[in-house]
Image (cartoon, rainbow, N blue to C red; front, top):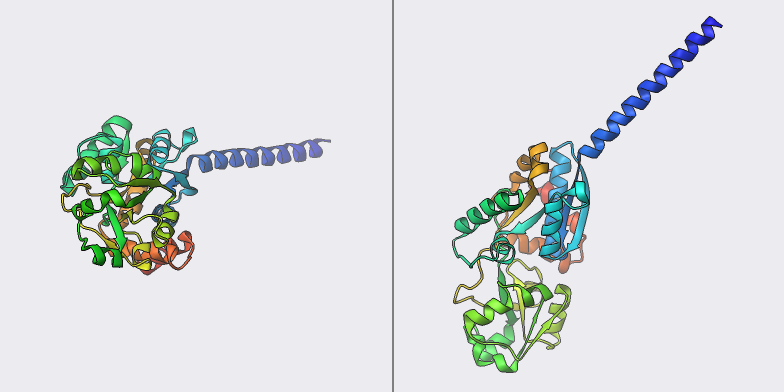
Amino acid sequence: MKKLALVAMAVFLVLLCLFSFGSASYGKTDQDVVAVGSKNYTEQMIVGNIVAELLEAHTDLKVERKLHLGGTNVCFESAKKGSANNGIDMYVEYTGTGLVNILKMETKKDPEEVYEIVKKEFQDRWNLIWLEPWGFNNTYTLAVKEEFAKKHDIETFSDLAKLADKIVFGCTMEFAERPDGYPGFQRAYGFSFKEVKAMDPGLMYSAIDNDLVQVISAFATDGLLIAHKLKILKDDKNFFPPYYAAPLVNGDVLEKHPEIAEALNKLANSITDEDMQKLNYQVDGEGKDPAKVAREFLKERGLIR
């Protein structure tokens, strides 16, 4: 009987240790999961996957991908909450968007000044931390068909004034409403188009191909600008601010895991506009998966295996 009691006690102690180890591991796993978000278009899907891949390769964190969330406000509000409150812990934002669309400040032209303003204000107001910009400037632009530009001798935004009351403008719903979008453009350039059609980003190119619109809003890094033979017009009044891309991280999460900054800053000032345009084209022009494009890019840079 004494021997049986000792055996039973040993089994109990083993089970107790296993339970305790399991509970501790589970708690650690919960603590070390971070959520990476993105907006709802190609470039954001690519950079969101790049963030996730870098964290998985260079930290011990587990990454939950919450990509294609929605527009700027959706991602921004989610980042303020953090994953502890069913939000996200980080996403890639653009400095001009932070300045004008989120902070509601006046447009500024100096990239360094814009970065320093958003860096300070976001930390002071919401404990959101801007890491180092990755190098590319995804500024807004306007684009028309190359033959349309030649026919009407159009090189700049101002050149559109002579045709504005006869042509239709296609843009995203966000661009149609944000202060650094169409409303601000109207004030800066002093004219409006015959009609504005707000649509999904993916539909704008087919719309201009089929002459449903004659001019569209675009990002300077859009891969489809090449595929659809569109001409980027010059912002001759320098209306659009710089939109340098940089990871935006919840401060509470970054304080717990400073290794996040080290991992994501590996791409600081290393991606050109042309690099990003090519990456976007691989998805929009060649039909590749954004996650695959992100992995291949990082492998080529020697940042993951």
